[in-house]
Length: 247
Ligand code: SF4
Ligand code: SF4
Image 1: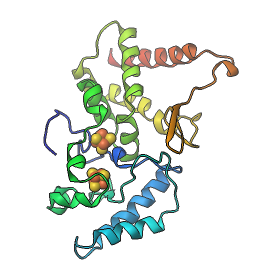
Image 2: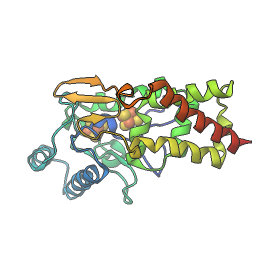
Image 3: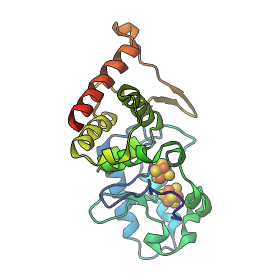
Image 4: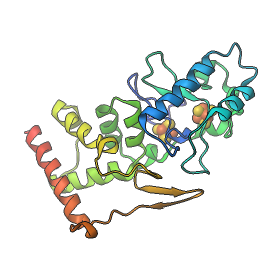
């Protein structure tokens, strides 16, 4: 990848990476277990190829064997997404030139080599460097990392409220403190572990119906609380713990 950005959000380090824009989570069943199984299958098949000359048959074979259905039809789920390291810590493009040595091989995928190599998701431009740093430093797991780094609102709103509560901006050097990293990790884990989340036809705040998607609203009033109460209560607690840990 051409280094146009200070942090490589796609492949930040040896512990994790992201493949969200290649369709990683775009499945009705996007549980870790299911996605991991699919990735392993794609990876094994890809690395069993004796040459890259018949990649179209690889594509067809995988398509025929996929039982899972897509969440959002207009997003392409690329069959060339897999694990790109032996320890299966990093997901990524198995056709990437760093894997195959051939830049043009990505023309076998729907987007083509140019789109694949030039695409940078909104995380690169919308998240501030300290927000990117916070996610990269505190999450060391490919499944959770891709969920967190692509949820711009989730990250930005969290820091906006934290800054408002503290009455000052976040200083990047504060993100080095182990207790702060732990508090951040606790927050980002909500993307995966929040006990009230709905897994059905949903990804984060979005729900899908074929080529349509909308923002899902939680019916707080029905449950007797306002959304403001929920957010304020949660974030106040987090900020308090963060400040205490930093003092
Ligand atoms: S969603 Fe963003 S961070 Fe993730 S692989 Fe795509 S461009 Fe990289
Ligand atoms: S070929 Fe393109 S769409 Fe497929 S995994 Fe690689 S970068 Fe993603």
